[in-house]
Amino acid sequence: MEVLLVNKHNLKEFIDFPDRLYANDGNYVPYIKSDLKKTLNKLLFIDKTYTALIVKSGNETLARILFTIDKNKQLDTLKCGFFTMFECVNDQTVCNELLNKTVEILKLRGAEYISGTYFPHDQDNRRGILVQGFDRAPLIFTSYNKPYYHDLLSNFGLKKQTDALEYSLDLEVADYARLRRIRDFTQAKFNFRIDTVNWKQIDKDIDDVHTVMEQATNEIIYQEAPSIEALQSIVKGWKKYLNKDYILIARSNKDDSPLGVVMAIPDFFQAFKKMRGKTDLKGLIAFAREKRRIRSVRAILQYVLPQYQNLGVSMALYCKMFEALVNNKAEYLEAGTIMENNKQSNDAIASVGGKIARVYRIYQMKL
Image (cartoon, rainbow, N blue to C red):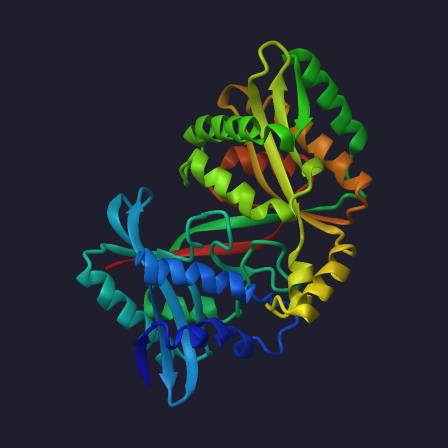
């Protein structure tokens, strides 16, 4: 058994390993391999900001990991080793070999902690190791893994840093009459409207979303608000997956300033699963066929300015969201992931009927 640095010659082994690991798991959703290869080429060989390792025994790949070093304000360090794309067979020895080598490299580069999992450049995408909620396939941009990963990481010495929560909401039993009463009262009291995103003025809408996120993040005890450039990149990268009816901005009627925002995405993971991670003709035909059948949606973003929190603005936004979901014939909704210590957002989801469906754990260890 040996631990190898990933290079251009063995990158395919890193990318393909999960296909064998999850071969008989109906809940597994593969990455789109062409997109993943492009991302990894940039991170590993162009920017050289990340390092990747694989564990091999003979010709067989047994584990993989991707990691980088950056600041971590939760752990109060400028040099934290963030890891992602961790996959491993159910063998503690293999896991230990992989993580020991990872820690060795991180220490040589001055890291004080290791923490993960986080997806590169986007803290809300595929973050955390799934520890609760293995009963159904993950929704778009959430992670999925083997149930034994918690034991592998814990036995190595990693401990819980925080949990991120994913909620399910039953659209059939939602109290729409109550939500509409709250919406109407709140909109009248604070004199605001709720707009859907306008692709023709997308720069203004992104700026408004950023304004809300930047101010609301002061009340959120975890991640920092993304930059305007990061938001623009996300919107451009995700645009083909977005439905404008599911991107809502609350704005003051007095001065057009933004008060809050919610955003949801149809569950294109349903189509990705049928594509088998490939964008060949068969995969593209499967995507075109399957995307018309998508009835599940994931709400990924909900922010309200601090001065309007707990005053009904988030419920007004969710009311409008629920109406859009019903009009689009959606049948299932999840919302999150929300850090467990983010009381405002967790309370907002619970107030509209949200129930915890999945728990994703972020682990850490002092080096």
